[in-house]
Image (tube, rainbow, N blue to C red):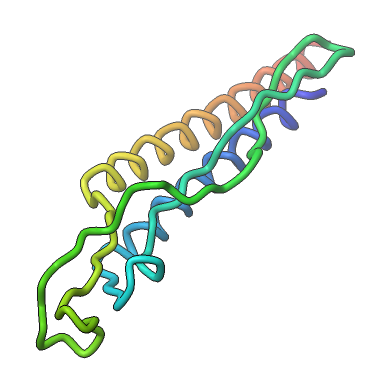
Length: 130
């Protein structure tokens, strides 16, 4: 497996991670009339893949799973989605944690781009030497 294939897998994984956090942020203020309908944050779950021929390992997205974080019940009898008790359910998205997740995945993505550029430059330098 080439360095470019390894970097591509890492970049794809970080993109899924970033998109999941962006989706969570987009739904941070979501309100539902029932606990079951409330938005729950999602997370990308990664797994390691080992290339037996070269002995190198890469990452892949094994799944995108919903969090089991409970939605927050809020008493708001004037809300159009309020249930018979006057309660609505807010999503349990932690906006600060999601921003950190986006910044971390963005930085990892950037690191992978730099690794790919370095590998490309080293290959070009090697070809010029010959």
